[in-house]
Image (cartoon, rainbow, N blue to C red; front, side, top):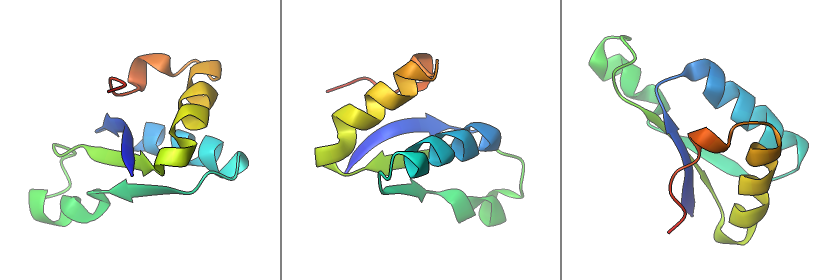
Amino acid sequence: MRELVRTNDIVLVSAVGALLDGARIHHLVLDQNMSVLEGSIGMLPRRILVHEDDHREARQILSDAGLAHELRADD
């Protein structure tokens, strides 16, 4: 799995999830439930991961949607 996006913006997490779902790219959102520990202040970022095989396509989909600035550096 490779990290695609890391953000505190829950609306962005939903948007990225919808784009990936639309392309049938399986993804995981990690640290989503950390808000219980942090008190729901949105301090801890959520991470969106995709399988290595889908990473390039997922990056292209987000870039095409105008979200290239949200992508993690491509290692």
